[in-house]
Length: 175
Image 1 (cartoon, rainbow, N blue to C red):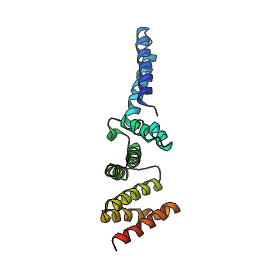
Image 2 (cartoon, rainbow, N blue to C red; image 1 turned 90 degrees about the vertical axis):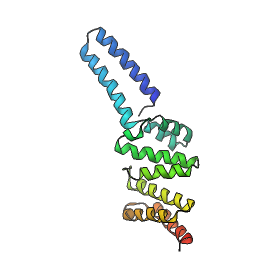
Image 3 (cartoon, rainbow, N blue to C red; image 1 turned 45 degrees about the vertical axis):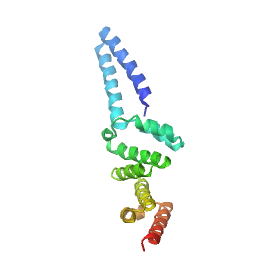
Image 4 (cartoon, helix red, strand yellow; image 1 turned 180 degrees about the horizontal axis):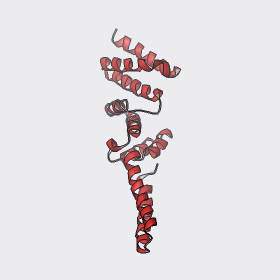
């Protein structure tokens, strides 16, 4: 929920409070300050800066979103629900930079984790299929499009239309 600078600022305030409270022998409050420092650290490890990055991403500020995502030192330590979203956002940033190989890699990883909705999961699979069509890897694209079929009833009409167009594109290249 916080940027790393904000976490560091808040952590410093709690640390200074901890020192002052121990000096005054108010150990219960000192324990509370210590607990808040631990919670800030835990929040960083499990949540990262995804909320900040998502805000930038949705406002189409991709450079700021990328900087926020790169503040996460170990994405593999993020919680299971957050890791998929991290990969989804990072893939979107790579796509905006036209770095299609990295975008494909991040979308493939995102597809392995739970996302907010079935539509987001299918969108991830569709992105991988689309990238593979553009790169000429039609068999892989076909495999990812087949994975979308099991969610056919749960996705919206717009996504169904995109899948249909990708199938038509595949037929052109691979009759």
